[in-house]
Length: 373
Ligand SMILES: Cc1cc2nc3c(=O)[nH]c(=O)nc-3n(C[C@H](O)[C@H](O)[C@H](O)COP(=O)(O)OP(=O)(O)OC[C@H]3O[C@@H](n4cnc5c(N)ncnc54)[C@H](O)[C@@H]3O)c2cc1C
Picture 1 (cartoon, rainbow, N blue to C red):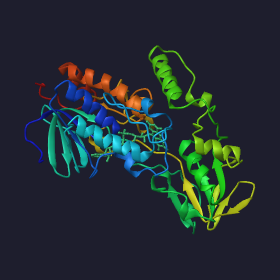
Picture 2: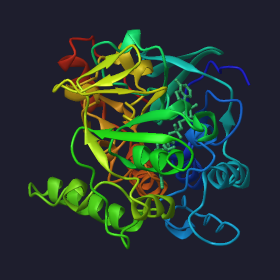
Picture 3: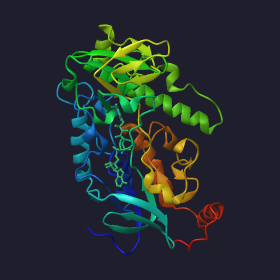
Picture 4: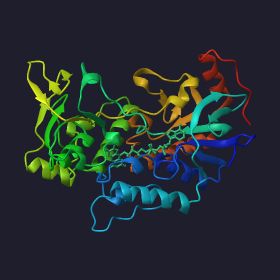
C-alpha cells in the first residue's frame, strides 16, 4: 500500500497491543483509519521478549477488547509466544488495516492536517495516535569505566535466555520485574550477583497484575481529584511469578547495593571491594520511543509529552497510548491499554476543536493552521 494523497481521518503509529486496541474501537466506530507498523510481522515488543517471559496475570486479565486471550495449555499465565499468537489472531479477526513494514520517521504540522513522514512516503492525517511503545529505546545508566569492560554487556532487550551464561560469573543490575525474572533463571546455571539501587521489594505472593491494575486506576483517579493514593512501590515492585518465588525460596534473590564503577574485568564498590565477572546484564528499563514526534516540539520534563488524558497538551490532534501510567492507568499493560484506548478513541472521534488547535499553535509560536474538516 502506498501513501495516499488524501488525509486519512485517524492514523495510528505502531501495531503492538496499544495500537491494536485503538484499532478495535476505531473499527467499531466505522472510522476511516490506518495503522502503520515498523515490523515485518504482528506482535509488537512481545516478538522480541525472551522466550521464557511470562505475563504477570492469567489470560482473562490480559486481554484486549472483544476477544479473550486463550489460556495456555496447562493453565497459568501466558508466555511471550502466547501473546504474539494472540495479537496475530486479533488483528486478522477484526480485519485491522495494519500496513507493515512502514517506519514513521517524523510527524509534522501540515496544511490543515498532520503530515506523517515514513520510509514509504508521507501520509496526511487529520488525527494521529502514537503507540510506539518503549522496547525500542533500552535505557542503560552511565557508570565510570563501562567502556573499558572486557566482558560482555547486555540489556533486557537483547537477553534471550540463560544458556550463554552457563558457569559464568554474571552481574544482574536492576531491582524491577525484568531484573528479578532474569536473575531467577540465570541463577540456575551461573554464579550471579544482583545489584540494585535500593533494596528490591517483592509483592506478596497473592498479588498479580490484577491488583497492580486496580492500584494504578486508584492512583490515576486520585490524581485527577487532586488527592494522593499509594504508589505501586508502596506495596512492593516485583510480582512473585513462579520462577521468582522459586529463586527466592532457594535464596538466590539476595541483592547488593549498586557498585560505583566498572573495572576492565568486573565491578567495584565505593569501599574498594571488587568483583570479577564475565558479563553484566542491565535490566534498567526503557524510555518511550518518541523520536518521530520531535518536530512537534512537545516534550516536557522527564522526556515525556504532557497530556490531558491521552491527548497531547500542545497538539490536540495527537493522542499517545500505551507508554506508561502517564498515558492512562497501567496503559503499558494489555488490560490497561484496552481501557485507555476506549476512552482515547471516544475523545478522538469527538475531534479537537478549531480553537484548541489554534491555541496550541499560538503557544508554540506557529501560524494558525487551516481549519479542519
Ligand atoms: C519484563 C517485562 C514484563 C512484562 N509483563 C507484562 C505483563 O505481564 N502484562 C502486560 O500486559 N504487559 C507486560 N509487559 C509490558 C509489555 O510488554 C509492553 O509494555 C507492551 O508490549 C507495550 O505495548 P505497546 O503496544 O505500547 O508497544 P509495543 O509492543 O512496543 O508495540 C509498538 C509497535 O510500534 C512499532 N513502532 C515503533 N516505532 C515505530 C515507528 N517509528 N514507526 C512505525 N512503527 C513503530 C513497533 O515496531 C511495534 O510493533 C511487560 C514488559 C516487560 C519488559
